[in-house]
Amino acid sequence: TALLFRCPAQWLALETFPSGWAAKKEGAGWFLGDEPPTGGSMHSFEAAAFAGAVGALVAAVSATEADRERTIFRDCLSSGGANVVASAAMNPLDVSKTRMQVQVHLRGSARGGARLLRTVSAICAEGGLRGLCLPGLTASMLREMVGGSIRGGFYVNIRNALGGEANGSWFAKAGAALASGCIGSVVANPIEVVKVRLLADINRYPSTFSAFPEVVRDEGWLGLTRGLLPSVSRGAFINVGYLATYDHAKHTLLRLFHGNDSPKYHIMASLLSGLVATTLAAPFDMLKTRVMVSGRASAWSVLVEVTTAEGPLSLFRGWLPAYLRLGPHSLLCFPLQEELRRLLGLGYL
Image 1 (tube, rainbow, N blue to C red):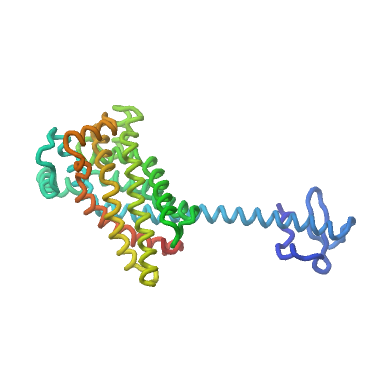
Image 2 (cartoon, rainbow, N blue to C red):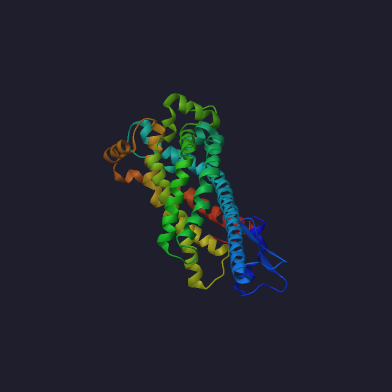
């Protein structure tokens, strides 16, 4: 390795060596020394130059890989940190949304439907503020540490690889959001199963971490994959509506108003992304919740049952609390993520 680094890169364009230097062969390699080679300086120089070029390439690739790994880690850290804070703040609305989605299912009747205020009142009457704020909180934060880090951290790198950075193609951003959303949802699905069940019934398991072995004991390892298809579909589409919409909307606003990337544009883009993400994800969110809570039904059987007994619009049940959660969530998460990226030396998204 030492022999490869003896030839500076700037000498590669020279026809001769600097004064007083020549290439000397040692073993299988060439290095620069103070004795002239016996076989002619030009051939010796070419060998040394090639060795130097290989050495420079190896060093550059090693540095690039190390930098890339550090960048991905910081991307994931900024995304995961922002999502954990936002999810903890919005957990009461997540509880309300989940209860609304399973309310008709648990009562066995589609008559009347669920309403947000009535649901919140029922939760508070049953368990007080603790019952509204704490169910699934640990699982929600844990899920964002894992899934949120992957969704946001991988998105940036996949987007850049597809040529969608800054003012790039919307399709590249959407593709990156779909891919990172799928990966994050698959990895975080076991946590999502526990979270949804605790949101629906806080007394179902003694604690968040004891829930995992209980699920495996009662349902086998496949129990942790319950609702995987609607969960991955939801994660993919919510990421398109959330990340890709935010990213593209922000840069579109910057172009239209000839502005500098700043918090006011982050806020405007956040408001739009929450609306789009909620609407795209609502049907998948409904199916995911029903499948995970039931513990037995398939996504297809739930889809048929819901649309037949409750009508197609029931797939959007819980849209209002979902938006009341995702809207403020994006409003809090994206500006915070942007500032974390800036503090970590990554620059704005």
